[in-house]
Image 1 (cartoon, rainbow, N blue to C red):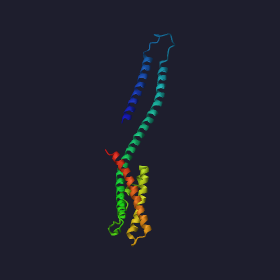
Image 2 (image 1 turned 90 degrees about the horizontal axis):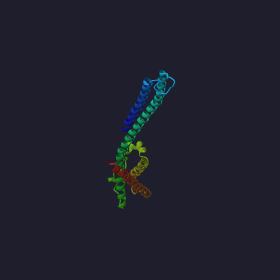
Image 3 (image 1 turned 45 degrees about the horizontal axis):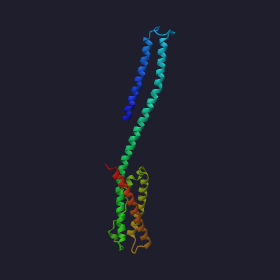
Image 4 (image 1 turned 30 degrees about the vertical axis):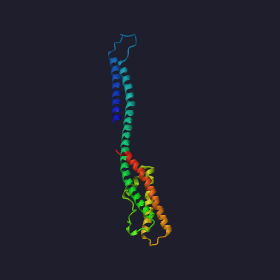
Length: 214
């Protein structure tokens, strides 16, 4: 808005200069009394008017394209600024939604981590089969994660890891006892890695949300 006012003011200023210059030269050509000054050759009035008109035409021919280009640049800057603001608002909404999904995944990993830490047998019948199903927020915003830069890349890695844990969890619930020790070790490693990845990523998201909060 400020740039637009400045441009209009400058346009008015330039037009006033042109008008003043043309009026001054035209008035001089009309009202100048030949012979009142030094002895000089008579000047053809029509030639002077034509010369002044030619100069103004050249000035206008230079100024008008420059003015149009200046307006085009200003309009493009305004469009870019609007697009950037819309992008920032979208990223804020996406950050909140993704943070919620990360927190849910972290909670499930920590729950299983505590179950394994107890050392006893885990009652598999009480565990939800869909515990590690992908959060809808991940699917909703996955194609736009690139807008987050490196954070979006890490979210993608977390989603892939959650898919891995979901498969291991399904096997954990399906296999008959006793469970193969190599499988249990692998599953526990996936759980611990999931808790680590989601925990550090959630802290980063939380700090961003807090820093942008009104």
